[in-house]
Image (cartoon, rainbow, N blue to C red; front, top):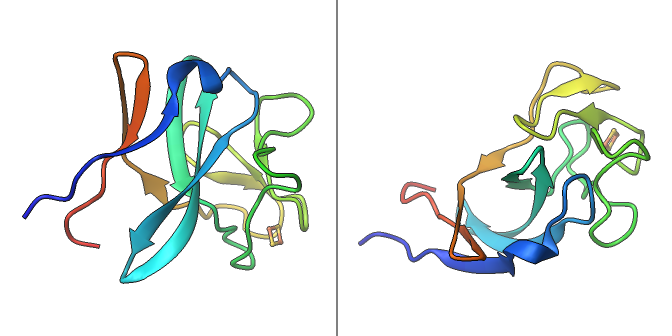
Length: 118
Ligand code: FES
């Protein structure tokens, strides 16, 4: 049976380089923290789990971008990730990527689209 899409935010809640929204997903049989942000007009979502140490990235609830609003930053040791693909471009997990999640935006709403095999 296909997993149901999950409403995570209204479109206006996500501004380019601004606050993200946190939500939860089922990931390999466990509930895991996730987040969605908007960058260059497109919404992206990832597990909220740094690739250096598996801790949540946001230093304040929903604050995922660095001060430039261009890169995602881990609050613990400052790893920097590209918001469009989750690739770490600086820091202790350089070259690794955040776990990307599928999302869709339609009719002013943003949905998480669960994978059927996780
Ligand atoms: S835990 Fe994220 S950079 Fe170390």
